[in-house]
Length: 518
Image (cartoon, rainbow, N blue to C red):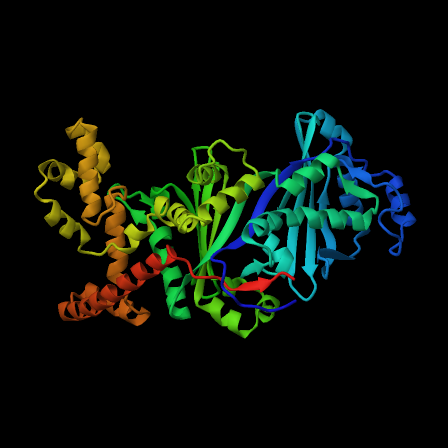
């Protein structure tokens, strides 16, 4: 497998979840014919000795169940070009399947398999397979969740380079997990083949896309800066904010995000994930996950990268963006494909449309992931004096000044307060626009702005200095307090520039090195 490091991609195709309809036949987990089929065909027989048996839902479930019951590790080859084959080891680590009566009596029933796949010389990846019967068994979907890049190159730290032109490569990457699954099923039962409709659907990329994850990287001058940025994200989005009524919320909750962070053994975050929902039922819209990819790789994964790529990874923060159906719909609209079916082929057309027009896809993805939901530029650019500077700049706008103090006191949202005073919607929009031009985000409530100022005020202290500050505050040692605050103000000015620069760089992701898939 050639080892190249050319950077002709700016994002990594990561995990996606998609499904194709398959003929609805019921599984027969205890069918003795399964054992007869497996004993009849030996490894030296060719695939076309007998006409292939088409892969209905029950047949696929039977094969997956057999794989799990036997518990054996299979060796398979996957032809990717005339001159190249990739070799895999595969085991079915888990299988849960319903009975035929469950499928025919329940509205929804499913069979699930977890296939562990090792590309030769690489680390393990997981291929999730689900057969989902709907409407009392009237129809069935085969759903697959996998990372095509990991399956092709043994890891998803970098982009896969297939040698195909971009349009063909996009579709091939999303078809590959289905093609590999078909080869695995044939390794168990050599008479297996996709049904004609399913095969045509997979070939055309007409299978339904449930969600898709892409990844890009933020560059940093050093690993220390990368880890400090993660700590800043954790402090800003995850630290509770105490309001005037002594209730507490986080910035994530204010922005209607579900926020999680993962600390290492020392308590320092290795990742911060923020998920936006589209409604009160918590149906997902878009998920953004910042994390230290080098720290999450196991030892074998780091060793497989080689020195130059490992060094590159240590200075780049990974950002995974998962687009769920609403976000996918907005992408289609941006590409001029509104109303098109949510399939992989439409997805690939949308990426092609936007990629070919002055980096519109890059601009769209970073705006959706970082600006629209997270308000990252507004948060990173905020400093202690921002409120006073904005007020001075806006002092000549009487309608705005009439509600300014009430807004800062948390008596309502800025739009709400302005609408109560000025019924004219155009006038309200003009005031909101003026606030933005003055350097404030009007959608960030004042408790958040006060909390950002508080985080900044203590951000530059070491543990010893924070302890000294607390002691000086308790003893009212004003000389020590002033000295520490002067030191901290210098640090704040420098780090604010650093964080703003890092956020700006995130809107222009670093070119990602590639690894040849064959």
